[in-house]
Length: 257
Image 1 (cartoon, one colour):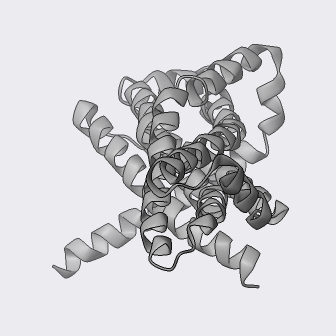
Image 2 (spheres, rainbow, N blue to C red):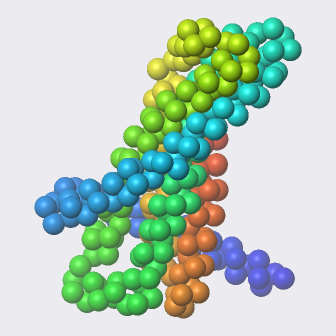
Image 3 (spheres, rainbow, N blue to C red):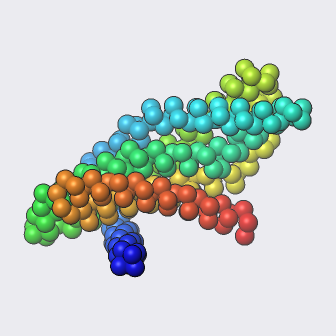
């Protein structure tokens, strides 16, 4: 039992150290993403992270806003304060649920695909071939994905916020009789610029974390197809945990200190 726990702790520490080292090396080479040879790959990754992920993200955002509007409306209707639904939905989506749901969706779809792609290259010795040719895998493979995810996650979050608020407005109007004008006024009165840039900064951090974790797990894959599958699972699990933990600390940083 002690040996098993010790092995898990040691493996977790090694994975965290490798991920932080990879992130640092990529940060030192971010400028290479704009080079002509890598710009095409960076744009391709931005398409995957943004446009290709938009349909499922927008569907989830609409129903997330609808759920917030429904639950908030049920509680507020008991107090006769249905006109507050707009403010609650807008602030909750913009400050927390928008970047949170966007991060989870991108981690489960794009992050998993990144880990699988790079993991397959690792077990098939393509990564070793790049190193033999003198090409740094961090610069060639990770930097375009890191830049694309960090840039596109806040952009996708903007659409998530808008569609989520729209979902809440639809439910508020249909179920609780709150007019569109009343919902909009309540949302605009409650929202502050701080809520907007806090949510977007969270999305930026989540994007960087997802790409770093996914690429690190792919580069550490061992043992053929089974190892790739385990790397993908770890990438998704670790990304989810980091999104939840960092979301709490970022909220504390912006609103409590």
